[in-house]
Image (cartoon, rainbow, N blue to C red; front, side, top):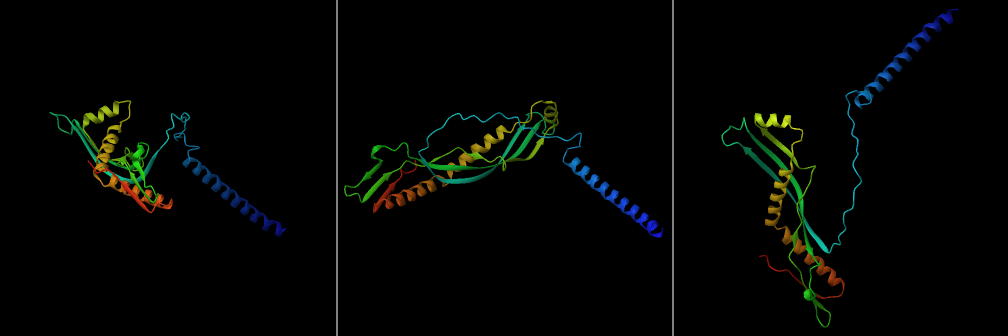
Length: 219
């Protein structure tokens, strides 16, 4: 009888401990489900209903991408009213634009006399066009609004507007400034140098002992 009485409290203690552990597991699962949005009535989920990507066109490329430059610019765009203080009517935005510009040499426009080979096929002269620059390619992950100041009326208009604030003008300004910086940099010269080295190594591997690659001077 003593053994039965001794085992009975132990069994009750073990059962209570098991129930406590089970309640902890249920509470932990419920907390995780709430954080993940399963049981949160105000939780949001993203549903991608985008249409399939359409291939519009394919173009053959006859160019050598010889260099690429990374650029960053801070766009400071300000709009204000002529007769009102900025606290009432005005807006100033600081936008960081970051992206790349590729430089290439186009071989598709080479004329028939662009390549001259000596009669003994030991020397060759190649006349290349100047390198060109692609349009700036802004990186959306590294381009962002750094700071923004708005007047009271601007805030009210944005609050009442049904359209989200557009950043298209900021991107256009950043692209234009980066394009100007790329044109003023040594990017084109580096692309022409890399193209010259590439052609010299290629033609020498074909058996030419003397290779001359010329590029028109910058205008």
